[in-house]
Image (cartoon, rainbow, N blue to C red; front, side):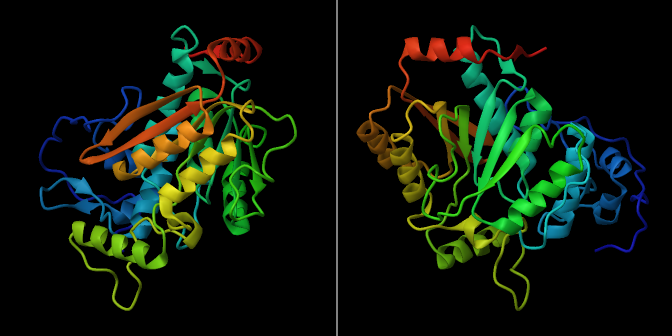
Length: 337
């Protein structure tokens, strides 16, 4: 960490270059331009000590420094979404905010496509976030952008406590976001959903790896891509951290998604659209087979990209067109201004 006092950024003797758009992000994503580190540090002074000039003489941070990335996230949430008091315990997953926001915007389009092109907003829209994590990013941004109400579940009580602290720090969010502990580690919906409870959307960013060894290997590779080795004497964790339940599970992402699809078939009328983030394209054939076996009425694959990183959302519903129309008639939200 630099010893520069907060707010004391490196001198900028040359004009700042025009902002360039990040390729692939959703048109409504507020992070399409380059980060303005001067404005971010002015909004969140604790970011300033991490801001230096990179090899191109642009203001930036060391993205391999977990504390720097956490400070950047805190600044982005405060400047862009008006969310204050966000924090993470050491070692928990610190997500890249632009990509997380993209997932939400694509889900808004999914709802809007069946609503005459109007994105439904407001408290009438309920979203279940499976694996909300200590960061609570999806509910915080989703409520800020669309006014949706969220339920977030997780198997980690400490993560839920941290997420609740971030919610409590922001007026109006406590009534909009509810957190629930998932006691059954092998379950997705069972023991989380209440009787006759209904959601317009389910979203999930599942653990990617199948084991600790696989997670460590992948993390080491990403450290090398950042031009660094893992910290001496420490396991090769990513700059954005991650606890065991956030990084790996039995069967990896493919196994988790297959279980999620199978469980969704047990509650077919509880949700309008079930969705999951799929990072590895090689998982898609097994996912499509699981969807067919579960008897879904309709499914979509929505491509996403952030620079060179490509992923996709798989969405499915058990409701036929008439049932979907009846659902929307019951749960119509306010249109996006």
